[in-house]
Amino acid sequence: MIGQHSPCNGWLGAAASVMLLAVCTVPARAADLPTRIRQILDTMPDPKVRCGALVVDLSTGREVYRREANLPLVPASNQKVLAMAAMVENHDESFGFETVIGLRGADLVIVGDGDPGLGDAQVAQDLGVPPLAFLDLWAHGLVAGGHAHISGDLIVDAEAFDHEWFHPDWESTDLIKWYGAPIGGLNLANNCVEMTVRPAGAGAAAIWSLYPEAPVFNVENRCVSAPGARSATPGVGRKPGTFELVLSGKVGATSTLQAISAQDPVVFSASAIRAHLARSGVTIAGAVRQAPVRRADGTLPPNVEVLARHRTPLSAVLRRVGADSQNMCAEALFKHLGREWEASRGAPGTPGSWSNGREAVSAYLHRIGCDLNTLVIADGSGLSRRNRATAAEFTRVLTHMFAHPRRELFMNSLAGNRTGGTLQRRLRDIDGEVYAKTGYMSGVRALTGYVHAGGERWYAFSVIFNGFSGTSQPYNDKLRDLCRVLAESP
Image 1 (cartoon, rainbow, N blue to C red):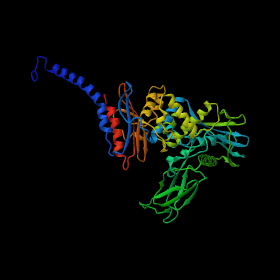
Image 2 (image 1 turned 30 degrees about the vertical axis):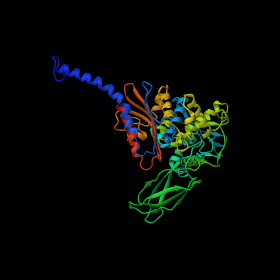
Image 3 (image 1 turned 45 degrees about the horizontal axis):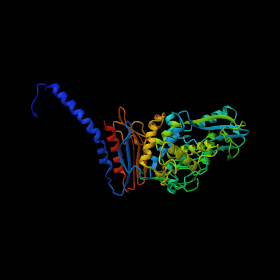
Image 4 (image 1 turned 90 degrees about the vertical axis):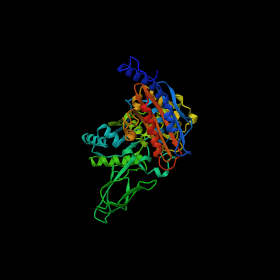
């Protein structure tokens, strides 16, 4: 009877009660997971907001939660997941982007491979070297080999990618920003320059410098020195379609300003490389010329004497795309996939482009069973607002990659509370492991990835919010809460 004690009561009875409670509680908590997710995602602060979401238990393959999962929405940087997955599908850790320097007669030759990591400060830091260390090695090799003076030209082969540097869908105001940087067959330092400004005497013109130094830039200096003035704020912009920078405002103390994109990645990279070589003792008498050097099959002709090869591993580029959401690196993956796609169809030597990149990624998605009718693939980075994707198709990609032999290469490239990147600080108080790709754009917040709740329990999820105005904090909170609930599930 309730309230009466049997002879077995005591520590054994108490233990039995605890065990019974545990047995009853665990299934209840597991069954309650969909309810907990509904409490987060079923209501929006603004009823006009559209939300597509899907959560799948990867240990069983069952859907845990679904909301408008087939609704095509603007994915922002979640779009990067598609190019990342397609790249990992085709390549293992041995792949790398390779840039070659050599001699052809009296000319110095640089053959680009579309490497987005060339001179990238974060990639260099991860590899434990200075960003432009490869240029120092090139210069040392040239001098040591008796080639300190090049009597001919600097020939640049940047035909790995086409010459459409900026995607036509990108907003014009984004094109001078670091996140709207162009992509070319030869790239350097994310195709951006950073300007450092410091004051001279009061009222005098500010003193400025660019990194990397690239003489192709012209600077109109309107910035006035105001030593010690805390309110002094310098700013720099670029006149659209030009290499003309305008420095304005006032400067009170040494400041490094936000990076500005180059107008033409190949011209910029060649200018900066030539300037760096000159400072290191290698002079080039002739002009910079762009011309094909590599043959259609990708090999170099016998009249090119290779002096050095610089290689950026795929894992480093994937980390920049997934963990750091670097747009230019994503577009390099996209166009590289397009170039390979053309070669597979019997057209080797065709430059990578947004058009054939779209075909390559679409073919991959079709092959793994995605519904292409719910997708619009405009670019690789998600900067285009014409992109459309669904939570269901993102989750399908995640499910496929979870069973892939190169799963770790893909997952470790994503941001998270263990892997770092754009999510580390937001999710630092969550005990489970989160590997995910963020998506940020005006009126758009998205998160697509995995949560490891312990043992064999893994979840794949995708949530996309579209159409809100004002602060994004409520939607960021919902994404964080979802990750916490999944991590806490038994």
